[in-house]
Length: 313
Image 1 (tube, rainbow, N blue to C red):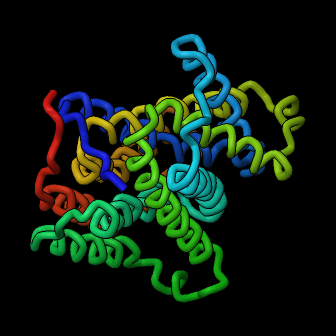
Image 2 (cartoon, rainbow, N blue to C red):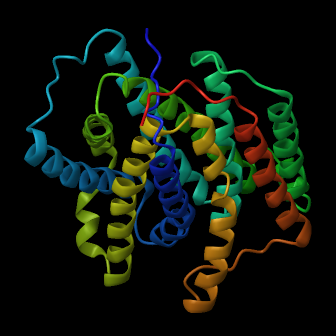
């Protein structure tokens, strides 16, 4: 199977990656508030439904309904893996957020780019250099420091905190499967087409577990949160998918490493601007230091990789 090669338009890839990082950084805060009014499966189903409808209108008006003739063989398997990966990412992340604060969840899910880089070693034959191994040491060390005052809770295998952390780790693994499958599918399909098929698959998969009628019981605040989360899905993953087409996976991972800091800062602003909406993040200095170490480690992992061969701009 041929390996996907980026276009080399790194400036566009950088901008798209920054937009993705910001949207993913603030998303857990909105989702945490929405969980008070709606269950995870219904939230996820509506997010995919809105994203699919808007994306379908855009694609059909531009190119007509995408053909399914090329979805066969290895491409079909990749699409199935990408769909399961993204669906698993969404629902496991929401289930984990029921037990964790947005800041903690975002720090743990930072393992996702690490898993994507490991996948790059296996599937894209990317080489790990000494700087990247040092980055992994930083990430692991940062996690230990971040949880410095929560070890007792983490050691309780049935405790809510431990369950939440494990769910977010599982979400990160599923995201890596999605991202790597998506990157390979870009060899054949436009990013929007891939996302549309994934969104349609997700709508079908989650429908038996969702309760769509709950939408009519929402107040104006939760309804706005749901709309934000739905359009966040469309814009963030659209930008991420396009970024993969123009820039190397490791460089994108470097930008996404800033997500925990974005979330922590956004939570602080949210607690000031909207008191009572969400409990402020309770992090001691060591935890904040640990989060910074994780960011540094993620950047080292991304920077340590040699540039892929790319097409001319």
